[in-house]
Amino acid sequence: MKYTLAKRLALAASTLLIGSNAFAQVKIAYIDPLSGPFANVGEAGLKGFKEAAEILVNQKGGIMGQKLEFTGFDNKGSPQETQIQLKAAIDQGFRFVTLGNGSGAAHSLIDAVNKWNARNPDKTVLFFNYAAVDPTLTNEKCSFWHFRFDANTEMKMEAISNFMEKDKKIKKVFIIGQDYAHGHQVAKYTKEMLAKKRKDIKIVGEDLHPIGRVKDFAPYIAKIKASGADTVMTGNWGNDLSLLIKAAKDAGLKARFFTYYAGGLGTPQAMGAAGENQVIQLTEWHMNVPTKNTEKFALDFNKKYPGVWFYYLRVNNMVQMVAQAMNTAKSTDPKAVALALEDMRMPVDTGEVWMRKSDHQAMQPLYISIFSKKDGKTVKHDSEGTGYGWKTLATISQRDSQLPTSCIMERP
Image (cartoon, rainbow, N blue to C red; front, side):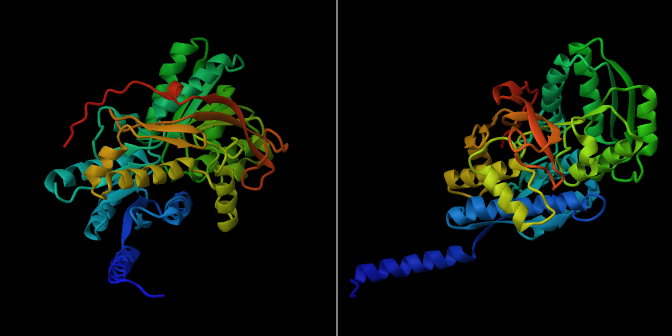
């Protein structure tokens, strides 16, 4: 085959372009606990991000021909260490960071990002929050440089309390949580919303415990039993939830648990058969929500990473929205990406995710589900090989999940 000069030049230019992009990367620093009591949660999240980037972005052409990659930075779950890891990431050239575990760490990160960007307007950093749910992060403390892809505590409690309002079996509620911003917020909204919607419900006890340091929850469960509670409300996550549920199981506590994170790593196995029809969760998805693509993604993920069960649909949503924002903006400049993300509406397997411009809070469908025996119908898939999985009790539409914001955002 003979090439004309023009064709030869075009081929050479194309080869140079492909060669250049083959070495280019869009890098996001994953700052979360990769050691300590929540290392299993952090490691599972990092695997989720890497898999989502590969399957949902890189295998579909990447970002302007570049690969999207996530690199782990271990903050040990500490707000102070979070700032150290942010500096390490910036020193290595990262302009995008993500974090999810711990609102205390998220507060620390958003403060550090705001200060860095004010001092370095030519080297700004953008923070993608996939799981830290303190409402203040998108209200009084909102920032142009922060986007949240999970429903916040107030939105979740609004949905749960609406459900509890109709359940007349609930008479006495005990609140237990981790002693930091998130645990305090869950307790606050539980009391406020139940007082408004169900004045007949009594809060019979409230307890906060050190985060990540309790090895035996038996004394806490004893207090719950003594209170006569028929319902426990908790925002616990990770081992703090698994050990709490295990202690309840060992003590034979019959109260039902309303949770934010019971589907997370290790908790289904801690519950086993004892959790049947006793544990309820609110999530943006679970394995038995009918979907077009996510079911296959989750099954493939579970097969590829034995013992690490796919949990975060919001991670997939975030990865796809960030990639779409960069491709739309034709830029990886953080400010341009932020402007492209604002008001973005993206179809997902469960409906639509909308990133509200006024506070950078994602709106999406939510599900309330109960731990139930696998039946091949409403519970098609079990969770963590337990023989029990999640059965949908209620679906909250994206529109119904929305709450007002007090955010007054300063824009660059």
